[in-house]
Amino acid sequence: MSPDELRTQTCVVVTRGRRTGTEHVATVWFVVTDGRFYAPSRHGLQSDWLQNALHTRSLEVRSARGSWQGAAALADPDEIPAVLDAFSEKYRKYPSVVTAWRAEPPVFVRADLA
Image (cartoon, rainbow, N blue to C red; front, side):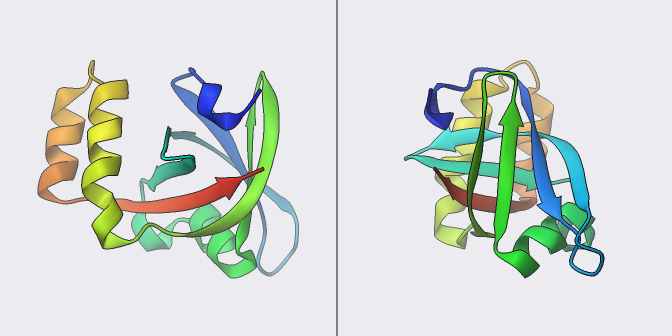
């Protein structure tokens, strides 16, 4: 199974602490679009899991159906409209969230998972 086939609403993002090296686990909303994994950071650049991912330039995505690792970076600003469209489609039960994100986009991490 590839990450493109994940149909769950959430997944677990696992990073390694930038100071301690210990495992840090966060449950996130996500989409996979154009072969890339995207997840918003609820606390922006202040989020520990995001800081860890950017520091180590890697993250792991876990679900009940598998585990994937990949290089992590911030999503480019030109990617954000397509990412928001993908979130709007997947999370159509929560239109107010995506509407708020369109007005003020969160910070998104991007990962190419293998």
